Length: 280
Length: 188
Image 1 (spheres, chains in turn orange, yellow):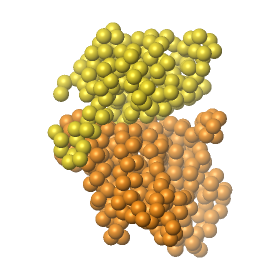
Image 2 (cartoon, rainbow over the protein chains, first blue to last red; image 1 turned 60 degrees about the vertical axis):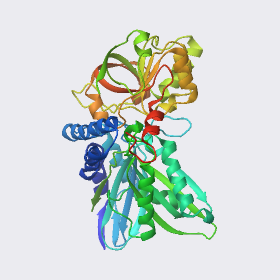
Image 3 (cartoon, helix red, strand yellow; image 1 turned 180 degrees about the vertical axis):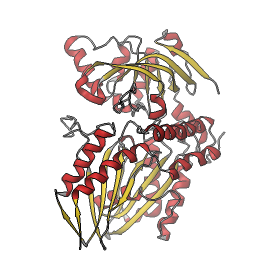
Image 4 (cartoon, chains in turn cyan, green; image 1 turned 135 degrees about the horizontal axis):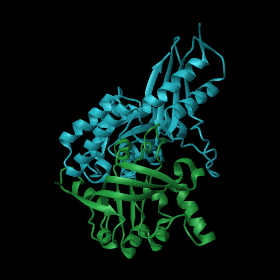
């Protein structure tokens, strides 16, 4: 048994808000610079160059790389041997977000109700997902999700007969419809199977994989390669100005599903795939 | 490819002569306004017969900056997705708005209005907010301060980088570019 005071979680989240917004991970910046060498459209190469420069400025000046510092999505992976004390988990997370966004000069982008649209003024509440694992560690992942890309999410309840071709068509279609809007080159998260809600959650979690890593499930890994290839044939290119780099990577997560169903969810992230992880 | 330098506001003819795919560097004054400001501006016009600022011959940059750090002119301020403004745009163009800067697709109706009114729609690099904010040299809130990041701001920019997406003939770089690089990915 291990005891964690939830104030520790609050403090970790407060720090992670600024780090996630200002520091685009090295592996992601490498995607930009690698693509400058392969992108066919000179305008696209310009855009990629701007992204490298933008990441440097954000890192050096401790300012967010994008003004949309997102809605905070928090994944908590909780070891079964942990006992929490202190304030309620949800309160600790939201208190961390509140002070992190305030101290970090991050944009407050959350409205209290989708229809009356009054800004909460502190970027809370976060969207929190809880998972339970073995052991006594707590893994916190904070993903500030911008809505230029989130708005391009798509879900289809395909039929089993639609098969892999139907799945590919739906996903490539979603990226084509999104076009320049989600700030390409994008990262595409795909959730395959489960139920509607499970598929969408998998699509988002899929975005937490490292660029270049393939699924350990062979059929999913093949699907990832095929999707990346077909998406990069659409011609959308960096910033949608045309080009050969539309997606940097595609990640597929799958789950068993019902005999009658083939749910497919797409969650797109812009070129700035930003999240912070911390283990307590 | 060379950039065309524009001092803004400028004669309508300068904007009309821009071509899709052309790179521009803008120096001068622009207004920042996004979703909530567009809604309120339009509502105000219907109620009071005027906008909170004279939009004739002006340019709107669709953005919602992050807060400025102490000593900074403005926080990161990249473009936001323009299509959410589509509902309000044809009316604003009719009333004299000359230039729009944002990112992403516009509706057919907006494109038709651009052609009919002789305007242009430009894009700035989405997500390059830290870089873009360095070209913003001054800012002041001119209306709707209560909207926070969505307040209307007047900004002065120096060599603000943008690219012409929809020109006054209705050519659309997003379509032209995609068509050129489609299928094999090497249409150059």
